Image 1 (cartoon, one colour):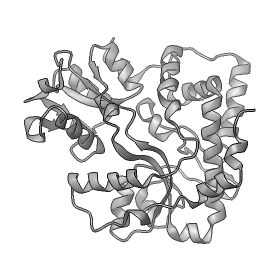
Image 2 (image 1 turned 30 degrees about the vertical axis):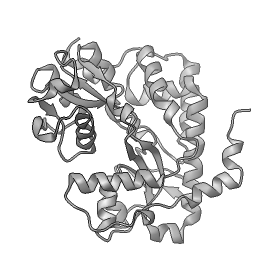
Image 3 (image 1 turned 135 degrees about the vertical axis):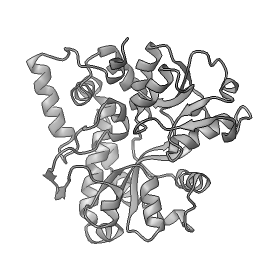
Amino acid sequence: MSAAGLSFCPEPFFSSRRARQETHHYERWLFGHQWQLRAPLGRFRSRLFRQVRPRRKNGIYSRQQSDDAALTAGEIQLYQGGAEGLIRLVSGGGDGIFVATQYNFVGHYVLMTDPSINRLEDLRGKRIALDPTSPTYGYMLKALEQVGLKKDDVTFVQFGTAGQPERAMAVLRKQAAATILTAPNTYAAEKQGLRKFSIIRELGIRQLITVTATPKKYLRERRDAVDAFLRAYVEALAYVKSQRDVTMRVIAKYTRHRDPEVLSKFYDDLVPDLPRIPYIDEASARATVEAMQIQGPPLPKVDVKTLFDNSLLKGLENDGFVERLKPR
């Protein structure tokens, strides 16, 4: 397979008119608030419900390319993405609070190595294609610790913009011995001969992955809008878990990947771990802060309990909303 294999070039799939209509209907329903998948394949999992263009429903406006800095500055009202940047901004006095998280543990990151690496111990003295400022750096250190290796026993090297295809190519070209990828990039890497280690999932690392956040001020003043958003989010999670074929068509459209085998495997890897209710676990929030303190630069003192608010999700559970979403 050529290097282009890491980009997963489109192939014909789901071409019937009825399938297209059903997919379009599902997009409008699932992302009616309006979430749509906008990222390339390697980032699809972590941006499952991120928006691509402004929409309005239930009083919620969304905009393209929202980020944690814009949230704490009051320019946007809802953010979905990594927890670390927002924690750092909030610890410095920014206004923001987590109201949901897609995952409370690191379950979809996979260590991929050169085929010459038979054991993790073989990484001693090797180059690792990872950005030392990213959360994956911390995951790698934990994996190395399991076999008695320290960060000084390897060399961390960033390639390009540190994107997954670039890191994978660095290993394929023998410029590095290992990197960390997520599905479906792992599938292409395996096909091209890289070796897969599942140690990161086995470690059960606590971490907030893909949080939903809002300014505290907005939560106080427009609690109804945040509630409406979370209702749509929880409903979308339930639909994804129960509607396999339609979900795969949406994935195919927005990732521009058409291989049924890959889409099926991607769905099977992704969906079982999606939460029924995306509660934030205090232990995971604390572990995220602790990992940031270790990796640096150090944070000011952070009261973990003030970083998140599960009350809206609890309200959805108590009023029977979540129970009504169960398939009949």
